[in-house]
Image 1: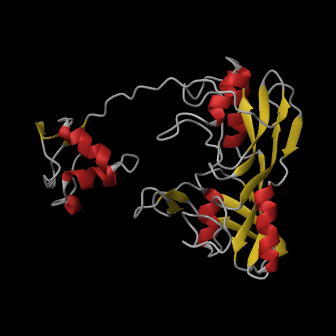
Image 2: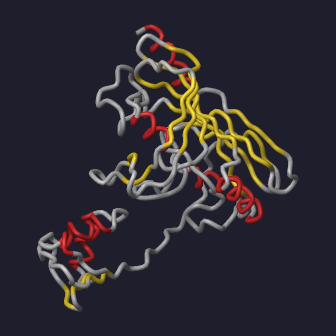
Image 3: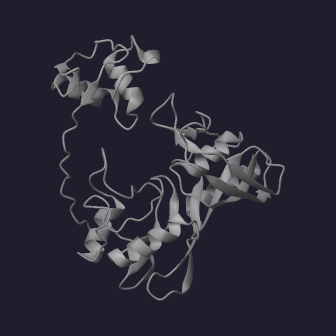
Length: 300
């Protein structure tokens, strides 16, 4: 990459962190320490300040994918056939292994349940995973057991034909019965751990809100997705000043009700079966914690 005129005088580690938001600054500094970052062909230190016109080359070593082991973790299976299965993921379970989560994930459970019958399209770390929901979001999720099923579901996700309805509890009382939020979502330029409405670098995102019940200080809603961006519902609800109850990232720092993460549940999932061509729809009952939160909110 070539440094432009407006970025001159910035430390090279800070500059690269801004250009490559998917990499942490500490990871970039490690690359610099290993002489994997050069400017005009010469290795530099983290404190080096870049100048306009300089060429920066960053060598990123190929990551070794860890071995993911099957684990006998109980699954709530709503449907299963030779091509796919539909599960009700509990709150607190990570979908696939990642930094700090190499066991106890849905993938570990799937490897035990399905053995080798999982789609390999998304690689070793995400076998069978065609879409995901956050760790602290519960609800219905489809998993593909064949590459044919994976391609079929992925295409439906691409054209936004899959039915995805979430139930959520939001701060504040929403006046409209129905509201559509159309706002692009991308990485938050001020905090790389968060997503945000980002008009400049975001991807199109559409969420349809419908009020189920107005509570004294909260609103119980459904959120129907046209698109499936990272943290989409959480970001969109926060953007209209109605963040989700219990959301540690986008809501108030102190929650009036003690919850393990946001009050968000993937209630309904509908899609055309990639082999039979039949439309199928599944529902996951609201978990106890969500029902508890609703009861508390009605009394506040």
